[in-house]
Image 1 (cartoon, rainbow, N blue to C red):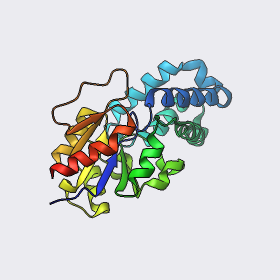
Image 2 (image 1 turned 90 degrees about the horizontal axis):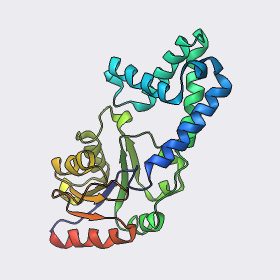
Image 3 (image 1 turned 180 degrees about the horizontal axis):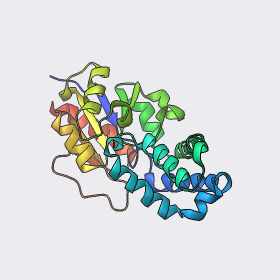
Image 4 (image 1 turned 90 degrees about the vertical axis):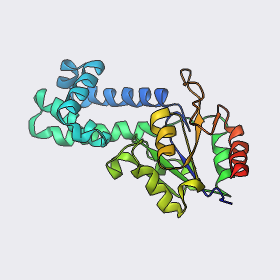
Length: 235
């Protein structure tokens, strides 16, 4: 009988809600630009800067799995267009640091921290994210054996590399791992495609209904340990 050894976790909308986190980070980012780059702010509203960033990605699709570099490079280009010339690269890097620091100011979902601490006593915990949240900046990182981001591996979920990296780190087979996440395509389908079990997190107001590919689903962190035990009992 197989035994569950690995629990891999998505971050945004699984451990915390992403929308308020990113909204605050965007505010801090733009406020910094108001002080450091007034000519850019005169040219680009927050919405226009976002549209510029999306256009930049269309022209540089190689950055789609490198979202931090994408933000830096697109801002550098916007700064150049605003007349900052050779200063643009340094200014873009400084502004990104403001954003990424604010990006880590997350509010964990209720009971998340306590449950992670409990689970870490019996399983290898690894985080897998397509975003640029840095788990190592958070106190809960002490419960995790490793954390991997798509921009580090150059491939985002639902592609296999993140899942395979977690399995390699934990030294287990896919049937011995459970991935927990909110996104049907990236998390549920991605995990199932490599042979892992999958539990669907449903915390946002517009969360999709329980998906047939998900082995379990939850909207209260206190439910998770029992769901894991139920999956284990079926193996």
